[in-house]
Image 1: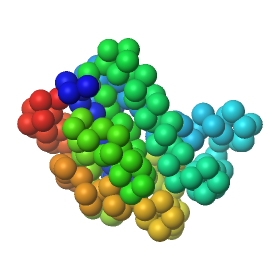
Image 2: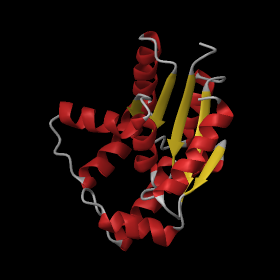
Image 3: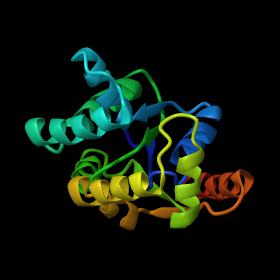
Image 4: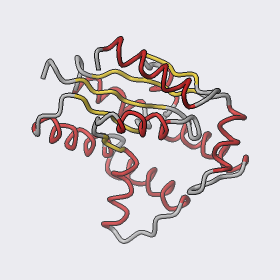
Length: 186
């Protein structure tokens, strides 16, 4: 597994994680989506997928099944991709410090964390304009608080190996991502 590289994208809501991941997947890298594990399980249990239900379920599943529930699903899917011959994999949306530590333990030589960071007011403006799951300023502030306090989301961002400052254009962010990819030989 020495030649496998895994890139984990982290950041707060509206930072541009999805745009960064879309750029990486457009290059042909497969994506393992943390939020997708939540959505799959909600569908399996017949829970309507709404922003509020997703927030409640995301916290509940971690409380009942352990803070490592989502990351265990992600690790299994990542290992399936590696078994199928994938050498480069993108992880989309590490939420917690627990997930960060488990991934670092599971893939110690293969994993690089990239944090997408954006000024708060720019993030809030982006989230308000989303066509899906748009939030107003108060809602995104509450989501930030909840993710930081309940899910320990700040840790993986603070401990990232690389940062992409995403206050400018998409092209600027893609250029920085390309620099990182080249540096880590992704």
